[in-house]
Image (tube, rainbow, N blue to C red; front, top):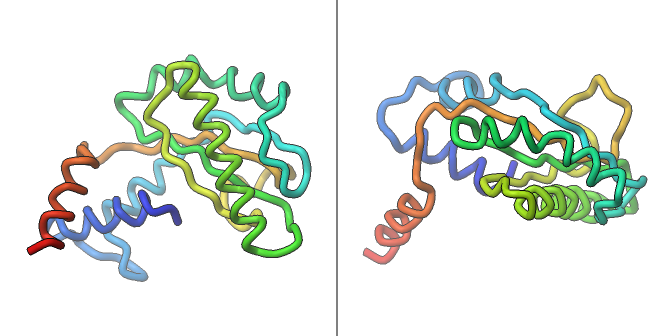
Length: 161
């Protein structure tokens, strides 16, 4: 789980008396996760390659119009996955760097609000496909609209006190 995901769930927990469901996850957070829709899959060469090649750029470009439509109303995430490599740390880093490469490409094409997550070895995500080395561009519902920088400033000020 990415730091922003943890931060989002933490914010939901701190917002008041939220109903909590199985394993301590607030119901609102589960609603966000259940709203996940994959808009595109960007393939990477096997194992730990993190470079976005021409085929990957074409696949990412195919999602630009859809993403522009949803940028203001949805949470957009680039979620990296990797086939088993030498060790867990290497595959985790590769999956995060793949997501970052896709986010950078999307930003260079006008889609700026993209969160990134690296899942490492293909344990999660779209298990219906056989492409382990990939980034999935997924959208999620926004249940609340939080200015992340304002919340971080508030948390930082509380830490100083």
